[in-house]
Length: 66
Image 1 (tube, rainbow, N blue to C red):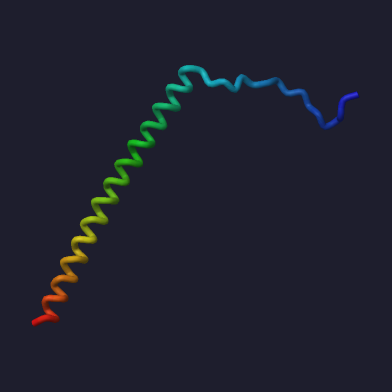
Image 2 (cartoon, rainbow, N blue to C red; image 1 turned 90 degrees about the vertical axis):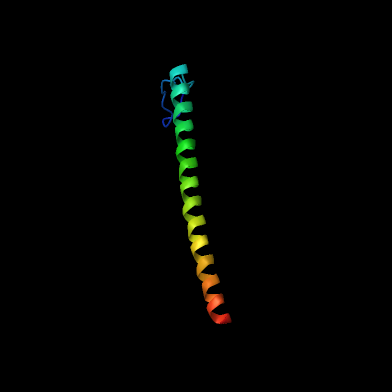
């Protein structure tokens, strides 16, 4: 006798096909490229902000010295 809670489900083919793997790889590469572009953009913004703050600090120090 089988337990009542057990259900026989047809097994799905879980191995991805070549097309699926190629699409996954392509999507993963696009994701990495997008992340890299975002990182570079953020780095540029942060560098500019740091430069502005440094210049402001230098002006402040120069005015205190006078």
